[in-house]
Length: 317
Image (cartoon, rainbow, N blue to C red; front, top):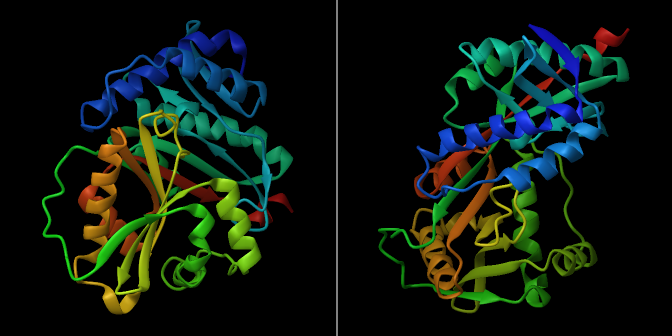
């Protein structure tokens, strides 16, 4: 087996591998459609291969796999340089795909560490046991997940009608500042330890105007006690489909938890999106946040896990 730098001449075969991996995951996830992503994957792989962060694996001239990363980012999961390999950016075929995944990381990181890149993230399909096991054995841990559901699929819950549910325009979302900052504080605490800072009113309004998100809220009388934020953009090429919207933030005041309120708000969201012609709803969440993980996994099907590994910076000494 030979390992070479990324080269555009391998893109056509890399696209075939990426499509095959999507097709495999589709067997497990109802909301993943039968679709040819050749054009999308070609564009994405062409762009990331130009960065030349990563390697391909060849046997007798045939492409067996590839592992590519975006250019390095300072402060990626800490105070070191890091890089990320999105869902489309790594692929593996052959009889021992787990070993291949291990070897690709070995050869890619050998070159990338020369640029002092010490933090690595790799996104894999959630039912790809071979690759996930290989990454785990190579010192990676799961940090986050993308999940999806069909909007038309019944939620099968009892709606809590003691509270009211509505959508508000992003221009009115400044009323959610305290809830947004409560979410920030929650994620800073154990066991998530997600470093962040609270928003000023000006910062929050600016972010809302930039994102143009949809906000769905739940009220106890006139008091807003929780919200979902939903955007057009997602974290994978699948979540960028025009019939998909994505939850990117959610919070409910602690005193109101355990009363089926978040489930009821989700029911309201799904009914609203159904009327709008939206077919699928996605969510990306930190798996290291057990509160979020327990909730989302009840109502959404995870189709990716993102694995991270940080090398000890003393290796550069």
